[in-house]
Image (cartoon, rainbow, N blue to C red; front, side, top):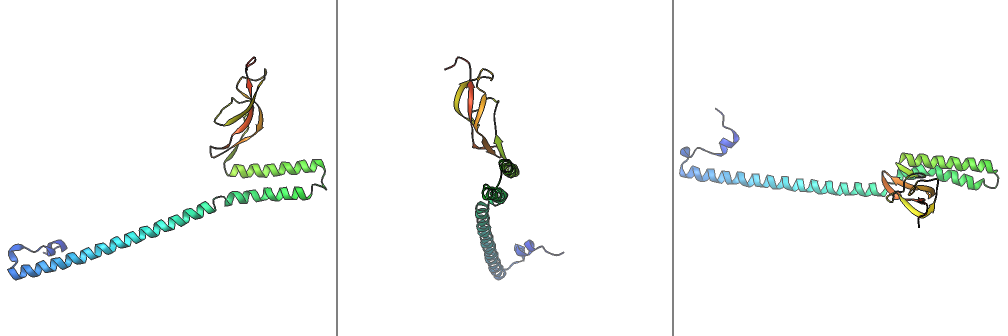
Length: 178
């Protein structure tokens, strides 16, 4: 019957003489020292791997921060090109073609906003929400519900559900209110 590795490290105490016991003890000490050295080496390698992983992850995060807006900026380039073209041709174009050009630029911008989950807040007729709207004034508006938006002074914007800018609005107040 073959002995396992563990069994070969633990000799039968009945089989050992005094000198054999000393030799066996020395062999076990050497095995322990070798195992300890191997464990230390593995621990050092694991620590070095973790440090390399930490540094690589840190570099990747820095790169992601540095170039996070790259795709969005690329989407805005056609908008800038169209605006430059409009400015260059402003003296030569009639009002209808200028209006058509402005409309095209707005469509390019809206497409870029859509691709990056930027939502326009245009709350006309909606109830006033102080989380999304900034009241610029209150006016009497008999045709509108009290505390509803009757005019949007400046539209607001959300990015992935997070408010970038509140919509600046004029709110209806109840008739006879102060």
